[in-house]
Length: 490
Image 1 (cartoon, rainbow, N blue to C red):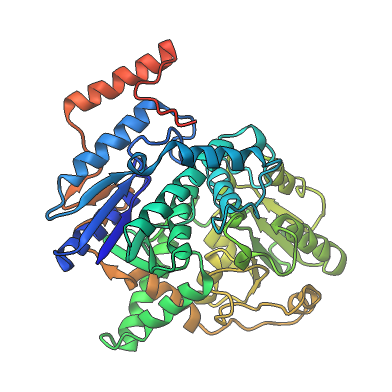
Image 2: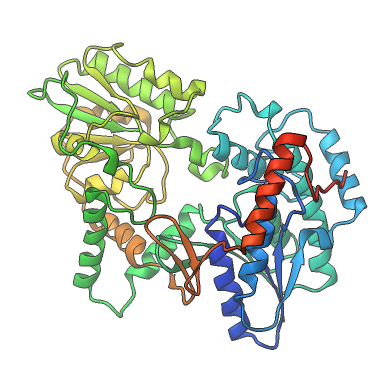
C-alpha cells in the first residue's frame, strides 16, 4: 500500500505535531508500506502563517520540519512540494489566474475549491469578512501556488497509484488542494484535527472538520462508548462546563479569564426582564461552504439589528443586552464597527463591547433568556439551565440544545412566551466529546499554553547555528531587501 501524509504548513501550527503523530503511527502499523511525507519546506514564499513572505520564517519552518523528522523511527520518504512541481504546472496556474476578474467563494479549478479555500485563509488571517481589502492582499499568490500544487500533486498521486492520503485540517488553500486531490482521484482522504488540547486526534474521512453531520456522528459515537457508565460520562461532561466557567482552557482560548468576575453593566435596570444576546465570531465560518449559512439572515449583523429593533418596538419594557464576542477586540473592518452603532440607539438595548471586562457568565446568570448565533455559549447556557434561542447554524444544530425557530417570524413568540430550558442531554454529549472524544495520541501533545510537543520534544527546535542563520536572513531582508533561497516558479 502507498500512503501519503501531507503536512504542508508547520511553523506556527499545531499540525506540525499532529501529522508527525500520524506518520509515526502509520510507519509502526504498516512497516512494509511505501509512506511519503509531503511538506512545503520553502517551496512557496507565503502561507497563512507567513503572509508577508518573511524569509526567516520560511527558513525556520523548513529547518524545524527537517529537525523534527529526525525524531521519526522507521522508513518513509520525505517529499517537498518543489520535488513534484515543474514549469508547466505554474504555466497552467498562471493561465488560470489570468482569467480571474474577481476572487469569489465559487471560484474553482477542476474540482479544487480555490476561491473558498483561498478566502478562508485570507479572512482567518486578516478578519476581513466582507473582503474590503482582498484585491490588494496576498490572495492572488496563494491561488497561483495552490493551483500549481494541486496539478502537481494530482499527477504524482495518479502516477504513483497512491492508496490513501492523510492531511491536516483541509480548510486553508494548500491543505484544501491536498483534500481535493484525494477526492478527485477517488481515494480515501482523512483530514486530521485535534478535538481539544492535550494528546488527542480526530479523523474526518472525505470531509472537512467543519462538517456538522460528521461532527455530530463523532459526538454520538463517543457518547455510546460502553467502556464508561452514563454517570461517568455525565461527570466528565460536567467537568467541561465547570472548566469553561472558571476560565480554564479546554479546546480553545478562554476569553473570560480576562473579565472581572461577577461584573455587570452599570446602566441596566435589572428589575426588568432581561434577555442577553451573545454574538459569534462569524468571520471564522465565512468561507467553509453552505452548511453554516445563516437560515434567517444574510449575516449576523443583520440578525443583531433585527433583534434589537424587535425589542425596541415590541418589548420596550424589557432589556436586551448585546454581548459582542471578545474575539472582535481590535477588529477595524466595517462589519465589526457597524455593531457599535447600536450603542445608545434604543433605550432598552445595551451594548457590551468586546474589550469590556463585564463577566459573560454573570450576564448569563441574570438573563431570563439567551439568544445566540451558534457560539459555544449555547451549550453552556443550556447546561446551566437557561432557555436558549439559537439564530444560526453550529456543530450542535438540531441536537435539541436550543430553540431553533422554523422561521424568523417565530422569534417574537419565543421572546414573548415563557420558555423552559432545553434538556441537558445534547449539551452533555457536546461537553463529553470535547473532554474525552477522539483517539489518544501516543507521541503528540499540546499544552494549556498552546505549545506543541512530539515525543516530549517541543516543536520546533533548532541548533544555535540555525537560529543565528535565521537572524542573519532577517537582517539581510530588512536592510537590503534580499531574500536568500527565494523561489521563482513564475
